Image 1 (cartoon, helix red, strand yellow):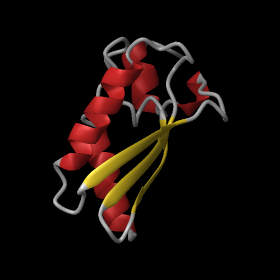
Image 2: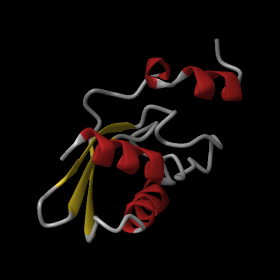
Image 3: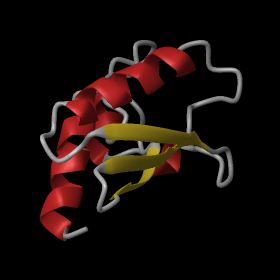
Image 4: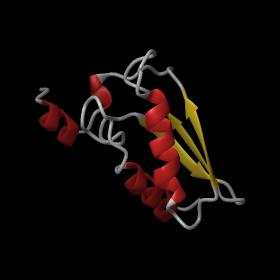
Amino acid sequence: MDQDMKDSMMAALENVIDPELGVDIVNLGLVYDVDLTEEGTANVTMTLTSIGCPMGPMIVDQVKTALGELPEVSETEVNIVFNPPWSRDNMSRYAKIALGIR
């Protein structure tokens, strides 16, 4: 997968908003990796802000919908991991400003 495709996938994922925080999952630092197979399967490795996040299934559905809008993607697999654990350090400057975190 080339860098342009990776950038397109990450841009699509910026449309997935964490409903509890109101910031997209990319700027929150929840997306660890994206990949696209030759067959068109998008593989997303990501985490959630907490292990028991009640919005997890909703976020996964939104990830599949967002990537499904890309013509190169025929299917999306989402792998939720908790290692390394998410922390505020993963967040972009934009996310920290939006949430009032220094």
